Amino acid sequence: MNKIAMFDLVQNELAMVEKELFAVIHSPVSLITDIGDHLVEAGGKRLRPALYLLCAHSAKRPVDEVLPMAVALELIHMATLVHDDVIDNSVTRRGKITANARWGNQVSVLSGDYLFAKAFFTVASVGKQMMKVLTNTICVLCEGEVVQIQSMFNVLENEEDYIKRIAKKTADFIAASCQLGGMAGCFAEQDVQALYRYGYSLGIAFQITDDILDFTASQKQVGKPVGNDLRQGILTLPAIRAMQDDKYGRELRDIILAKDMSDSNVERALEMIHATDAIEYSYKRAEDFLSEARTVVPQILDETVRKTLVEISDFVGLRKY
Image 1 (cartoon, rainbow, N blue to C red):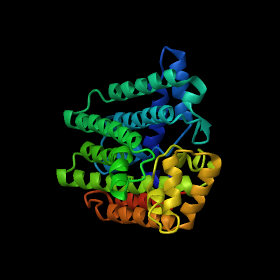
Image 2 (cartoon, one colour):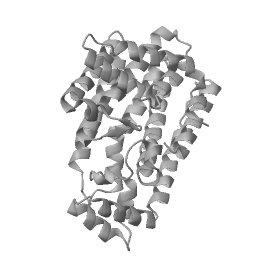
Image 3 (cartoon, rainbow, N blue to C red):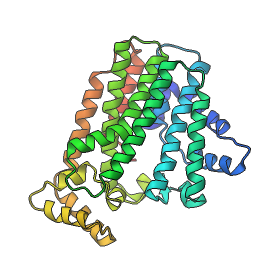
Image 4 (spheres, helix red, strand yellow):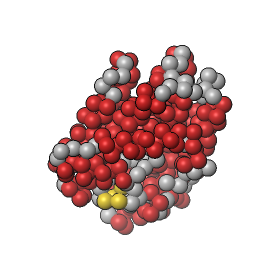
């Protein structure tokens, strides 16, 4: 099951989202348009608008009524990635040069701000409750970024701390995308909340697998250097688990505490993480959350939509990019 097949139910709407993204990011300032085009052309999974559209699909709303929110969700995601790349001083993402590496930090930050503004302009006419969900999502995202910065190189970070952090940085946004889809479909509150819980559990698992891939995938597969999080002092579940290992934990903690992330130290840290049960354990924890996601998919959705949401959870557990 690949991304295209998973999103087959909403492929026409996603094609419209793609077209609208290029239209929305257009600016009389050509540099802003160039950066926006670069970001859209870099691609991505379009997971958030796809989940939103899938969760709203059963209501059979006119496409012009649901499309703006789908576009806004992707614009917000793009904006956060631009800002993340500036904060992390990243050079590549998805195998392409980042905006900050090509155009500099100042213009990139302002372009990210422009995307946020365009997102809210796009959904200016949505209801008050949906707007509250969207604005709260961005607040939580910002909190998550600050928490991550505060926790860098902190060897006292435990699994509970990690889950709270990725809930803010990733899971809440994915959950809100599903929740907003349910709200667009005018579903009962209990079904909307079930969709939120599905998205939350899916989002936690998505981030765990993303963090695993930082240790196991090639740079070509993930579009960024292997061990990139560790180099920045961002301690993810595999590293947190490995630091508890009787044989390698102390040496790994010493490397992290020293904050000397030279190639040789990172390579040694990666060796130790792979020598423990950290990767296997992390996959198991991801599957725990995916199992939870599958159990809360509401029955009000069309059978084809329910099946697709389950297939998405399967993809997240097996993905290599």
